[in-house]
Image (cartoon, rainbow, N blue to C red):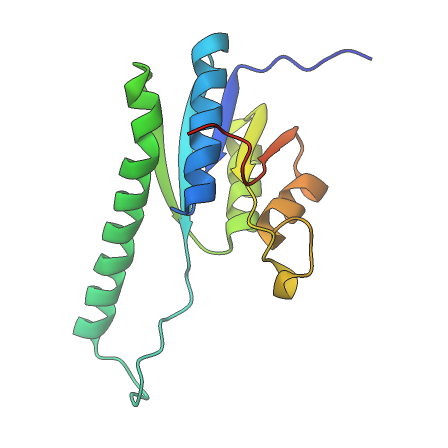
Length: 155
């Protein structure tokens, strides 16, 4: 069996402490192996329901959209910190939609060699060992997936 060369990794983040742990783990991998890294956050695309409102005005939709993008940028900035601390440049990408589908599309479009993701173990009503996103990536990604489990990194 020939091992696939790893040059380019994708680190998925949702802003949680678990995804920060995965970013810390990935930053050490990247530092040691001199890999190219991209961070991705997938923001939800369904409209956010507003209590008691049947229709949103165009101004409401613009404000919601702006808030989603600003929140996503905050998540990427926070996730970038472990890489900055070891002097590594990373690219940050924000996409909209279903996280697993968007990450899989990005891997196929840009030819990533490895995906690093955390797991919360809360997908599928908390019954799965992996979260629904990490589970889908493990099942369908065309490259290896490194799932950093809760408690894997040292503080």
